[in-house]
Length: 382
Image 1 (cartoon, rainbow, N blue to C red):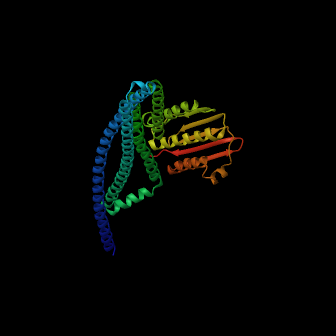
Image 2 (image 1 turned 120 degrees about the vertical axis):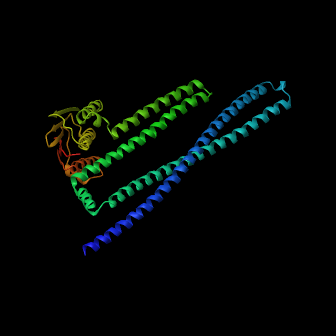
Image 3 (image 1 turned 120 degrees about the horizontal axis):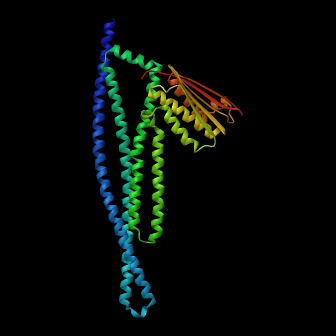
């Protein structure tokens, strides 16, 4: 009886593997087509860029001619007796012709802008499709790998997934890997784009010829703002994933964060570490860092405290984090009920991060007295 059931199950598994292979092949074909379309659109974008430069130069040339034409007209109006009707008419005809040329050039410029916007939207859509295809393909590979093992291996994997300890580590690790991906995308995308804007600004400085001194000053100011935006973007990247955690450890990274925060808040921060820092799983260090970060953020936004005390205590089997302030406190039950409140969401996230690592999270707060957060995380193997 059991042999027949095993055979049926193996047939189902083999059929499923075949479907996964076929669908994965289709996804690969879609990815290839998308990549080819992306390259074609990039070529079009390059051609459009050259056309834009040509139109800019044309508009500049026409404006220069119009400027000279206006000077001629002004001179003629001041000395009509010195010019024949034919000469006057010739200047007016030239002005009319230049206006028509400028209108055509402006329409062409508008058309290029519309094309550029359309291409940018297509490129964005293609990137989204490509990312989704990669995600699906990776999940297909994972599923195929699971199904390729025998039933005992599958049962072992299921048991591991059901282990809250391992699941907590994997879930938080997946969240942080996603943050790393976003960090890379922000660095390669917005940061690079803003750098290109600086080059475009410098190009505008060279092209503009009306009130050049004022224009140069304005563009230099714009350039400074863009540089500041780039720095801000890089700061956001750091906040998504503090690389110092991997290089230096939790204590130096927290010290660096607290030192920076001291210059931005109105309360004093005291940070104390008891016992030597253990070489623990990076996910544990990252979790404690995020909890401390969220607690300090809440204290800055809501507590109106004068002092915040942070204590990090290392033990052989667990780590304790205690964060206490002497602020105005709050009613914990009301905050729990109102989860739309940012503070409530932050508290929930701290609790969930602790629970996922088999840890303890306790929050105590009283109106007019202050708030105390206690976190205890067991030291798990990697």
